[in-house]
Image 1 (cartoon, helix red, strand yellow):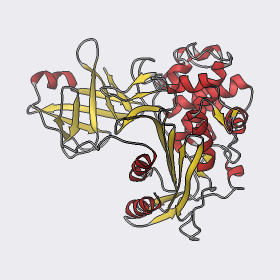
Image 2 (cartoon, helix red, strand yellow; image 1 turned 90 degrees about the horizontal axis):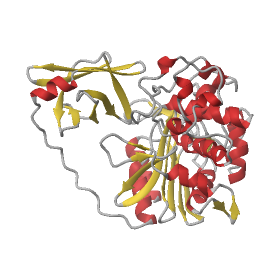
Image 3 (cartoon, one colour; image 1 turned 90 degrees about the vertical axis):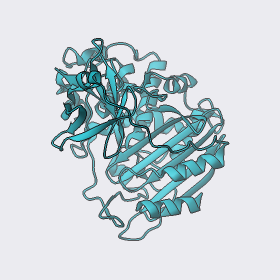
Length: 427
């Protein structure tokens, strides 16, 4: 494991990482590799804190679902029942839709903002219905702001600022003693500095460190592998850690159930967790990226195993190390053969159905037809030819992620979906 991790951080230009493996009720491997700060050369130690990025979402979900299990909030009721000052359409969104990314709320992830607890509520109360890029409940589309609202719901229903509510409802009960949302608390513990790439083989400390209290519920928890292992152990063992009940099994069941399907995919989303198969093993997982940091947590409930990876470079999650960890922890199926998808002919129907403008918040996509070919224009970029891989899947001729087309009732493409985000047709 250590050798794999060291080779991967060198290959990917990642300063350092902390890795933990869980089997049953025990942490069977915990190791830091690389450096916590490229300027000092201090080695990574497992107790060091890293920022999680979007892996935070499973913790926010645990808090809100826990409130629902206690009967303090109805996940299927309009949030306007609990949150005042929302515009008409947004007030009808449900907690179920927020937690499953089906609320139709646009996506963004501002790194900088206020450090004040009031920023979360102030920001959401200033929203207009324009934050909805489509009607709620129509399609899965990953939304950081949706989890801001979920966190604000935790704050209002619990009667405490979001950071304090998380401490009381999740971190303290699970014994996550060094996990916090507050940078001024995190800096008092051993902390791995966040880094950004500066060329192909160099990283620099990310300055100033990102912080925005208005977006904390979507991706700002500071934690270490030991604390995250306690969350995983509770999740894999009916809510118990060290023989003590710390998480309601009903919360675990609700978070683990599929609540939204990814368009044209076998994957689905629970609450703060992606449900998928990893080389034949059913797993729950989530990754995270926050400026300077990356993380990944994967759990296989049937095998009662988990792998946790934290890094100190923006968006890096060490996929080869995660795969090696799963090979160590359980029996996996064979690796899928890598085959380039075949191209198909674009039909006249394709040309008429797909052309148009699609939006998610401030991001704009346009599909154009010319000389019996389809082209994609993203934002201010040049038009790039599209290649058809199937009736619902297209990709840029130059390579990259696929674009899934989702038809509306009239047969025309109503949404484009790529990279977990959907874009609605603009008439």
